[in-house]
Length: 105
Image (tube, rainbow, N blue to C red; front, top):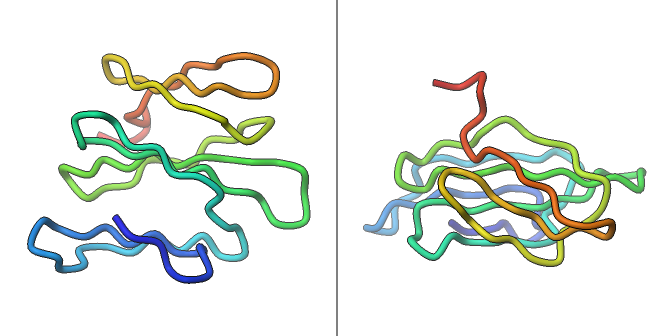
């Protein structure tokens, strides 16, 4: 995975270094990236432009697929990956989210 210079696009790259997919965020910008220890997932935390609101996109790196975006109330300071979920450390405590979006099969 690689970010564009302005942090508005996430590029998913295969092991050979070829770009497989790019995910544009429009006016939003990636603030932090967290990678699972096994390298199968990444979570990109982004700031919603013009608002004091954040979101994240879980990225299935083994299949080069992004999941549906999820709103979060603050930027995450840390992430832990556990059995198909990510636990984000937010300003007001931890929140657990499924990595695989229920609407995507």
